[in-house]
Length: 100
Image 1 (cartoon, one colour):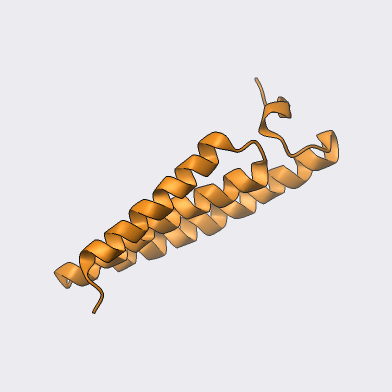
Image 2: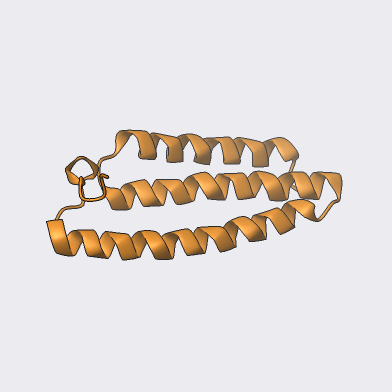
């Protein structure tokens, strides 16, 4: 059995890497991958605490997060393909099409 603090440490490390990628990178694909790291770090913590407390609710939350992430990626990649067709750039700073 893996100790709880190892899972928390892994989740925190992935969250910090993901947050750094979202805040510091300018490529839209890197930002999307960093968002995935953020959500997966939360899933690791959900499952670790569910195992620690002997409850299955954390695993159910993790499954919901995975389903919502799949939908988010599908929509984001659709927007990204349309963006590349119109602007032919992947830099976050150059994207001003969706301003209202």
